[in-house]
Length: 505
Image 1 (cartoon, rainbow, N blue to C red):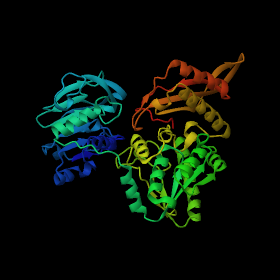
Image 2 (tube, rainbow, N blue to C red; image 1 turned 120 degrees about the vertical axis):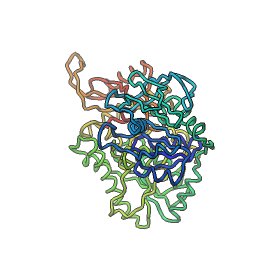
Image 3 (cartoon, helix red, strand yellow; image 1 turned 180 degrees about the vertical axis):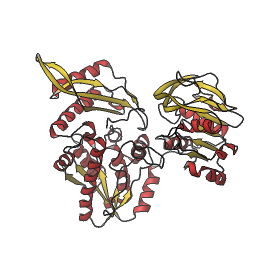
């Protein structure tokens, strides 16, 4: 077993996911509990995760230094490596920031760094940097900015990396983790396949013969979660689709098809378009916007629960990236609120059922495929729970909703025409709230700027902007400025995650 010390990184849980891919058992522990846990359970290796804190600040998270002297192999990632350096007498300074992909160059490749290439791209996300190594550590890899991007202490079997090997967009990251667990920690690798039947059995065991009101949006996550639940409890599933007016056109028809044709259920569709526009009136702050949407969803489901007093559970399609961005672990940073994360109000007596909460997007897709959902449903691009409300920066009005829906439809249509839809993770348009000058019909127009974002990812935790052919982007731009009213120009977002998030709000 490998112990992962969780310092609050957005990708701390992703480390465990990668190790499970390899067939390695993992346990998480918070830094304040690490020493006693490790002494009791005697893992074969320890991984220190990254985190949002800075070593240079007094309030930074630390760990009992005795953990480093237990003769157990340790891999420190980002903040985890900086903490090791700090505790063992090295120097960490607040300088040389790196966010996103950087080229790492290995001068030597001992032990876990015996990778297929000496130079490759790795995901960075740090403000602090180790500027002086502790005694006994040898530098093995660097970037343009960071001298000690990868280090080793072979005598103590302690290794440090400033980059994130767990990130999907770090080349050879999985191989590095494999080298550490297999070759240094001597962990046997027994990969386990995803098993939807195990989840179905678990749902059946939890729910029994009780009824579940299920919040469905037509998206991959809620569809897979509700589909698995329907297989477990049959007619006791009550899927509810709230038509907020914030979803893509035809979503209601897709929901009807899924829950009347693919699986027989007592589907309820609630028209709440006017209620959502009213709730969003005057709101410009994205966090307040998300919370207003979340509150209205809760209010609506309270009403559904009153009509179905025999229901015991409220099902949701929460996945792990939702949880971690909503401060899902003790020391994590809050990135943004997700309307389906944070628990239920006391007055709503339903119990939460979230069968895919501990899985990432690509795992949820695979579970859906294995459970029997059609490819076009599990492969559809993800769409945010708050819908177009988070793709309209500033106040959401009926007019701006109409604008973003037309722009979004153009982006998706042209990506499909170019046969790129299945090759990218997300493609969408954003009403930026920024205005610029344009010339239309020989007259000056001061109108809104639309941003287009097309991104490649597997698990939502990291993303790379897509190198879409220029002629496709040109067509998208031309159509948007001509077909969407009061738009001056179109820009293409070429920011990776990190530092950016997938959405703009």
